[in-house]
Length: 257
Length: 257
Image 1 (cartoon, rainbow over the protein chains, first blue to last red):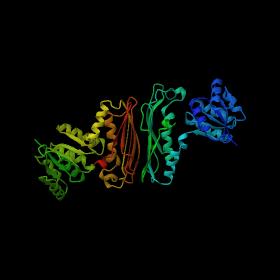
Image 2: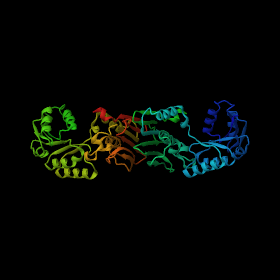
Image 3: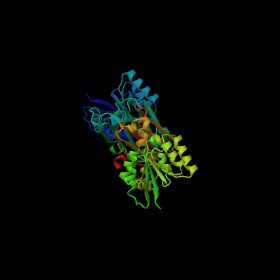
Image 4: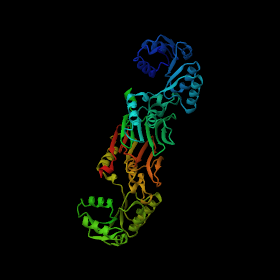
């Protein structure tokens, strides 16, 4: 039976997600309904993607008994409340990154999902790119020996975009693109927690980070460096360095999308 | 009139220095004497490079009235004492990097040189490479706009070499090769001092650093990342990233030499 999706929000990222989902067989994934805070946006979204139902409130979407799992593409500051709403109505969730704006919020959502025995996942798509899959397999099979250092930079001159620049929109370079650098480090070290993290960075006029440079200390001589920037175009690549060789992979997920 | 050089120590780096110096016209640079703690080494060194005088003690070298400037190529822990000895005899000094093993020692030497009104320089050769000169000119002329980030990695799997591994020999990866990453950052930012530096790293069994990862915060939104390692071969390149473009330059000074 097909997985029955509800789409929460009708923004750009929701268009991207639904466009990708529609590539898959309709007997596997079915689009049931879309909800936006503005009914007209929802209706237009439904028309474009051939979705049967359009709602003007999120409440209607989460009460729809046909909906099994909800994709949450609302802006960052709404993730916590909307995901809680969905989970409390017994539906599974796939939510855009960042999961929430802070650790406390993320822990709350994870606890809620566990309590209701529901699936909850952050849509960090680079985790599922074939190139990343290839890289992680190469690491596991020892192609580059023991990994001692991971170096990742991802920066784009997008500092003026409101969603990055404004605190009220849950902005911040690290949350938007820097998260992908951290993801490479975590993947390369098998999601191991570092022993120590140190960082420096700069805030813009709205108190939102425009650049972050961080170093990570792992056990047994291992280290990692990341840099992200919304001011300049950094190299946008990752080097995973082992005793037998180095894997270089593009982190330029803006160009990829 | 030619600059009259004395060579203090007859080790490998001294051979490299003298070989390079001999490329220059003899009416500009003249090799007067070499001193080693072992007279036979000094004599052998003198024979190879055609140096008239060979001494078995550093004292004889610094007392030689013909010697005008001394190149100090002794091992790192001897820099402080030997450079002080040379300066106190009224001779100028070019000393291998690192100048000394710590800030206190370096300040002492600088003060001594100033007191005697003598020239004192650390032989950080990458400062004078034509490629670096080209890069620094490109930065100054604004070819890449305003520099916002500098990222440098230099690592070589040389952890087992005694001069790197042993504390008694003034070892440490940062002092040996990491210093070149820091130099690129300093050069790119016109020797400006960072507002903040944070670092992580690992020590070997002798208490000497085998890897260092550090981040630098500069004023006006600027940052820098460096990584060095004696465990693995890092990319060995620098990216100097500005608003209009990026300069990539090799930092692989071991291969260059």
